[in-house]
Amino acid sequence: MLSRLASAIAGVLIATVLAGEARAHEGHDHGTPATTAPASVVPRGEAVSERFEIVAVAQGTELILYLDRFATNAPVPQATIEVETPDGPVKAGPKGDGSYRLPAPWLGKGGHIDLIVTVSMEGADDILPLALDVPETVANAGRGTSTHGIAQTLAEFLTPAMAGATFAGILIGAAAMAFGRRRNASVMMLIGAALALATMPALAHDGHDHGEPQKSSASAVGDRASMLPGGVIFIPKPVQRIFELRTELTETGSFKRTIELPGRIIPDPNASGFVQAAVGGRLTPPPGGFPQLGKPVKQGDVLAYVAQPMQAIDVSDMRQRQGELDQQISIVERRLKRQETLAPSGAVAQALVEETRLELQGLRERRASLDRIRREPEELTAPVSGVIAEGRPVAGQIVQSNAVIFQIVDPAKLWIEALSFQSLREVKDATARTSAGNALTITFKGSGFADRSQSIPVHFAVETAAEGLRAGEFVTVFAQTGDGRDGIALPRNAVIRAANGQDFVYEHVSAERFEARPVRTEPLDGERVLIAAGLDAGKRIVVQGAELVAHIR
Image 1 (cartoon, one colour):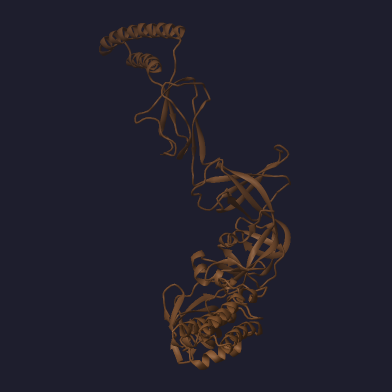
Image 2: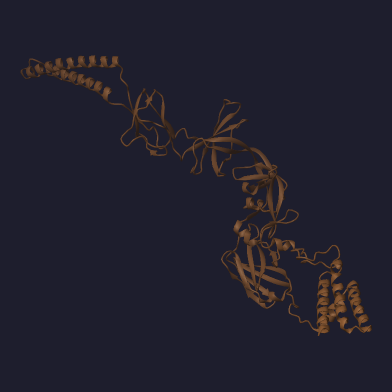
């Protein structure tokens, strides 16, 4: 019994040694083989035509097709796609977001697969040949362990060192049996197998890793956006949908030279005004209170009152004048009564009565005006229609004459005052750009003749909708001159500035790959820049979402 048990244990140990040696034999890589495709472990293929770009991604027994416009990279959700597969022609079903689902049970067979994709849209067909390689499934996962298989394994993986160690154990057991110690023979064979097992660490030759298999670089990338060796950025089509990446084909053209001027928003002088006090006095609010900032007002609206202060000497003079007028009014009233009594008899002419009546009316008006001077304050009215742009009146505040109480601005009529260090007598075309990146269409109004701090003021009228603009806001003006320049015009959002100050753009080199291109730029207008060097015509450049691409690491 002991001999049989020892023989079984020895066999197990030898099989273990052989299995370990099979994992560490000479000249083999013991981790997952590194793939040359750095993009993804998910099988995929791509194809392009003059109109479309398509990417096919294998997901189990389904094939997901991503269809985009070649020039703009915009998804195409409404197209008819028919694929010639190993099982015959199959029509792909749209998912509504520019991707299409195709049943593909033949993906389980693995290997190299050639497909022909026909895209029908807008009355035209595009034929795109497409190929993808699907790794073959492991066929021997459930293979049995027969005697023939074990013998074959021993023939393939048993190294000379392991064979020698095992043979030594067998010799020791045989020698024991020859000397008549059969009981100890099996024990000696067990010792020989243990010696063979002990030699296994020494057989782990240098330069091999026998632990956890190392994952390939492609496995680490997966279907995530990442930067590959060499600076190429891999962005799968699903991520491009999330980023909303859009491209534009570059074209070389001739453009007018543009100069960049600093400027600020100012009110239109014909549609704005100040509310000032003509005389000094105390501010009082109108019915409803003072108008608040941003409140619309109309021309002629009363915005405030100024109550004039009366000095003691002025009050004394006014009272003396009022007394004199009261006395004159009393005398003229008596005279008018006598004349009206004598007029019917003809003793007094009717013309004299009318003159006396007019004299009395004038004296009463002069008396009433003195009362109004003491009681009625000065009205401050709006000179133009607009909104209250500035003003901080306080009830009871003492203001001096010519003090500005309110500033009224029409927000639909604004100008830009720019400063130029060279004479601009005439500008044919100009645009402006706010700090928020909004472009404004402006019209040249005139240039100053006198210098202001070594610069010349230039006025432009804002023609586009001025929503969100405010007086005093700083802008950048791009004024075109007569000089022409050749280059490539791109939107400003396409240019990214690195930390070292270098400008660069991203070229869409393939369906899911992007590369940074350093460029030299010059100002063109409020929305575009001129690529003077570093880029050729016919390239697909990212014009929307470039900032997101720049953050991929």
